[in-house]
Image (cartoon, rainbow, N blue to C red; front, side, top):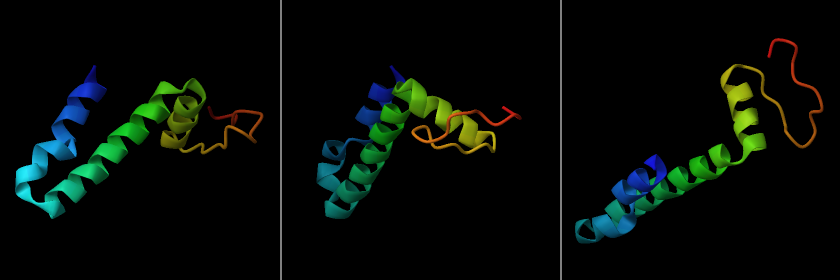
Length: 70
């Protein structure tokens, strides 16, 4: 699974010897990887993200119809 590989690559524990600044940056990347995983794992959030990528931003909780261009 790509998520696990990315998480292992950026995990803050891998940067323990490089100091607090490197660990802080690694933590930021780890959070981003987790957020992306959660977003892509959920079908509604994934659909909203794909719409956003194609220039049709929607709010899944309030938008009831897909844009015609979609």
